[in-house]
Image 1: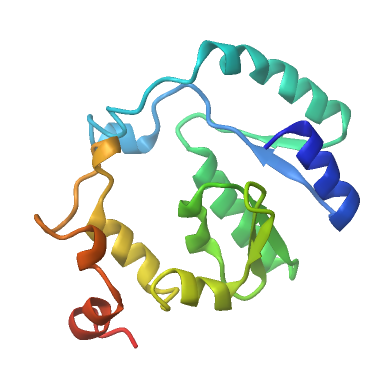
Image 2 (image 1 turned 90 degrees about the horizontal axis):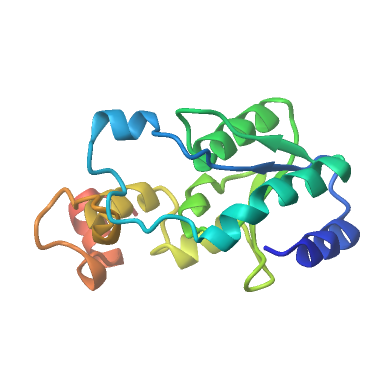
Length: 174
């Protein structure tokens, strides 16, 4: 998400609050639980890594809160801040191209994909993620992510095998 896109978003939607979450280059609690966690992920490109401090300086100058914490991933922080905001009666928009964060969508939480310039609501999630927002976590767990060395819970189950019929019949989710 470029600075230009962020400025366009701010200008168009005028959020009351804005924060940006960053991963730190440090092991997380998941690494402590599973040594190979994201073991095949390529490191951040040096060109991008060199830009991160500048990006943070620009964000701070704009008055944007930066959130990061050793031991946690940005996704964990986004989930925590989302929950806290909802508890205070706030509406939340998560801005990311990371589809994993779509599991946070629920009443009061929408998702904006800047790459597609599209908002997703709980109703969209039901349609997009096999028509069952609750099943998103179960499906992700069952599929795993081989490229991150996160295995599936059932050998041989993945991809198109996990469809809405499978979810209805075996997980009992309608």
